[in-house]
Picture (cartoon, rainbow, N blue to C red):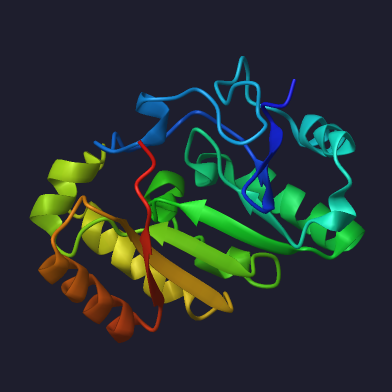
Length: 201
């Protein structure tokens, strides 16, 4: 079954977990159970390092320019396995690696995880979603509550020290144009790139 490693868009994706500390109002998993060529991204169990590596056998990995940690959960919920897989992919295929994250991985793991990404992750794409803490709580509903938005920004700024490409994103139509301008200003201050993602509903 293609629920651990799957192809979507132009990349090869790794689905490590269904755990997530957020309950975003626009989350794709609330309206669908699969993305790309996956059978279902709902996992019966969290895959081991070996299961992930074996799942690569379904694909010609060499043809992909990028491999992405992203599925129906927050990848940093399984940070140790993520790092192990990233190191293997770099050594075996020397591919660019991207981490799609809600930016709360340091809260999830109880420490600053950004330094561990150095030399392994080429792009960190963080869901910013909104330019202010109040609307962030309303839209994202993080289990960590107040302070989550600031933790996200701290993580993003830390990532700029260790990762070549840091991107903060919002979803088109979920915030106003004025809020998008505010998000762009945040990115400029942090040293990250701003991206507006298309809503897929």
